Image 1 (cartoon, rainbow, N blue to C red):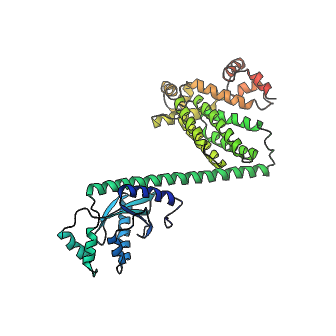
Image 2: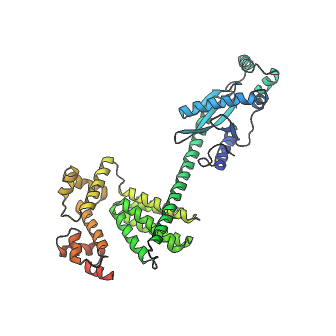
Image 3: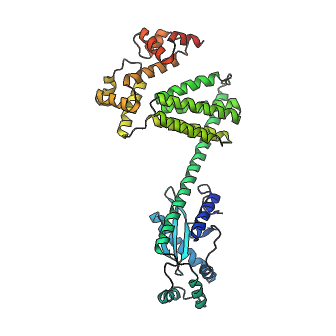
Length: 424
C-alpha cells in the first residue's frame, strides 16, 4: 500500500490495481517512491531484478539507490514528464512524476533494464561504476540476465505509464472534489435546518410548501437566473432532508422528478433539447446505483448546474457576455416600459445586433424574453393577497390590464383572476 503518499488524493488500492495491470502487460518492474526517493510500494508481482537486490545488499547500497531515485524524481517533477536516467549502478530506469495540482507527490519508477546487449565496453563501465563490489564476476553474471529493452519500447512504455498515472490522478482529484462538495452541501443543509429551528419556522405541511418552492425554482431555471436557482435548490434539498427524514426511496423519487422538471424548464429557457434529453438519460441511469442520500443531493446539484450552463452554451464568449448582460438588465428593469433600444443602449451595441444574438442563441426575441420574465414575476406577486390583478399588471410593467390578461393566459393557460382565485 502507498502509505507514505497522500491516500486522500491517490486511492492506494486503485493505484496498485492499475499499475499491476500495466506491469502484467509489459513485464517491467515498477515501484512507487516519495519525494525523498524512498520506495513506499513495490507494485504488482514482479520483484526487483537479482542485479538490483545484490547492489542494494552492498554497504551503502540502499542509500545510493535512494539518492538515484531522489534525483530522478526531482527531474521528472521539474519537467512534468517521464525522465530517463542511469542509476548509480549503471541500469536504465525512468521516473514518471505524480503531480497533483502542480505539486510533486513522488514518482513511479520503472525499468531496471538495459537498452543494448552487454559488450566489452559495457562491462568496463559497469566495473568502474561499481568499484566497491568485491565479487565483480558475480555482478557481471547477474548483468547478463537483465532484460534488454529497445529505446523505442522503453519510450513507449514510459509514455503509456505516464498516461495511466495521470488518468488515476485525474480520477482521484475528481473524487476528492466530489467528497468536498458533498461535505459542504451537507453542512449547508444542517445549518439551514438549525436556522429554521431557531426562527421557529413551521415544518412542511405535506408537500404544499415544497411544491410552491419547486415552481419558483423552475421559474428561475427558465429565466436562466443561476444564483436564485441554486439558492432555491439548496432550500428544496433541505426540505427533502427534513420532511423525509432521509428515506432513500422517497428522496430518489423526488430527485428524479425534480431533474425531469428542471430539464424541461431548461429547454424552455433556451437550452438545446437534444442535449438536455441526453443529459437527463445519463442522469437517470447514474441514479440506479446510489445508496446514500448525499450522493443524490450532490448529483442533482451537478445536473442543475449543467442545465443552467446549457442555456448559455454559445460558441463565442463575447456573445455569452452580451446575452447574459442583456438578460440581467431585463431581470432588474422588467417593471419599466423597456424596449429593445433601451437594452441595446445599455450594452452599447446596435438593437439589430442584439436582436440577432437573442434569436440565434436563445431562439426567442428580446420582447419574448421580457414578456416571459414579466409573467413569471406576476405569478410570484399574485401569491400576496393584498395585490389586485390591476396592481400586479402594473407592478410587472404592463400598462394595459387587458393585454396583461391576454398574455398571462397564453403562458399560464388561465386568466390572471382565475389563477389568483385558485391560490386561496
